[in-house]
Length: 135
Figure 1 (cartoon, rainbow, N blue to C red):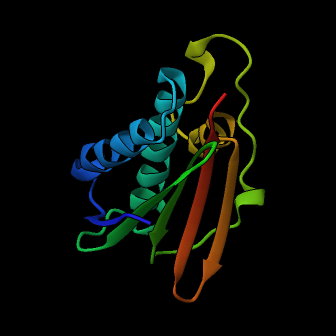
Figure 2 (figure 1 turned 180 degrees about the vertical axis):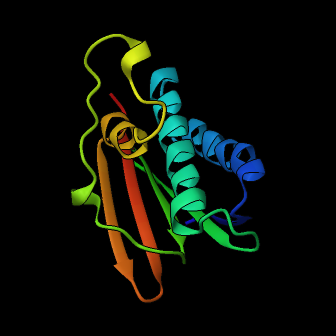
């Protein structure tokens, strides 16, 4: 799997996004699937930087991908604090856009945009795996 390590800083979100954007195009995803992958990875990386690393500098996010026959598998690994994904409440998104809280939607968007989202919390790192399949 092609792999790249990024400094876990908010100013590197565009670099992470560009790396995965190129991978999604290589995988042959259509424009809407590429957008979904890009949004999900951006949300995931932002969550890692803000919640796993608490905006500390000097930390790393390892990004890798595998082009599948029917899509792409993306893996993000961090070495920060873990969490319990099933305990994150589903946000209330009914109503007007003005009523939706601007925070707390990352995991919700990741699960809505990707076909599979799994978390593994191991001593050697927190592993987020996301799969997007071609339509």
